[in-house]
Length: 150
Ligand SMILES: [Zn+2]
Ligand SMILES: [Zn+2]
Ligand SMILES: [Zn+2]
Image 1 (cartoon, rainbow, N blue to C red):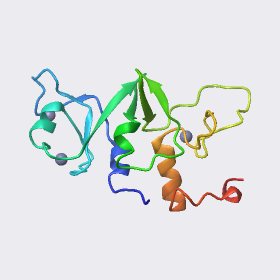
Image 2 (tube, rainbow, N blue to C red):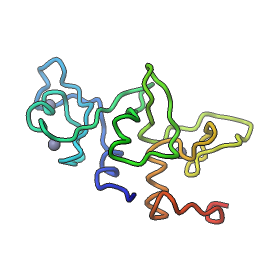
Image 3 (cartoon, helix red, strand yellow):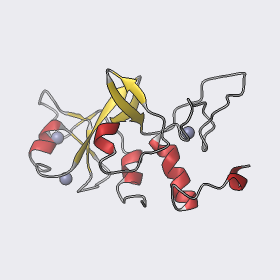
Image 4 (cartoon, rainbow, N blue to C red):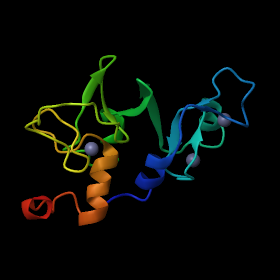
């Protein structure tokens, strides 16, 4: 599976801003991303139900100020194997982007292959962002080669 066109813009999009078009409405927080338009812009509830009505839209959620997405939603459109999953509010999610490393004295047995953040076995990446960096560098998610990373 190659990296879909929308992955890179999705990862660099800022979410949870207020929609400029619908800023006076109650649900104007931009917490969705349209995979069909792939405009590199987050959209709100009203944008979704008007301009992006029949489009494939991904809902972004928030956990401790970090953007997460439910695995049940994203795995329909993307291979997320190897990415660390978490259960937050009884839903299984993955983080979109790498998070700052917590200070840790001891070396962990399992670490993200890109940013070295410590992970729970048997995952390879801390976030979708790290998996995609890996994808971009080595072409495919499968071409894992121990020698490249030492
Ligand atoms: Zn809107
Ligand atoms: Zn759209
Ligand atoms: Zn990482």
